Length: 121
Image (tube, rainbow, N blue to C red; front, side):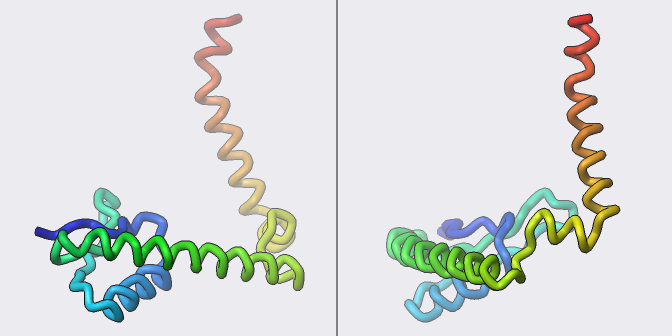
């Protein structure tokens, strides 16, 4: 029976490819399901044999610890050399987008808080 190893929600293509390569290197049979076009299912990486799950989880823990360190080092390097995307750099590059997003957030907060303000006053 198949067992879900990795839900692909918010997982980049590079990470899912690296996990597939990791499983291949260790001889673990797996397959990928794609996300649904309507966003109901986010897809996933599945193990064909559920008995491989503990070994695959241990491999994933090592992989994720290494990836976490690598991503943090890359982010720190990008911040040092000024190539990292920050709020300030995004504001300079796309000011209308940033203002529109901030206004949208303000409107959403106002709609959520409006009933409480009306009941209070």
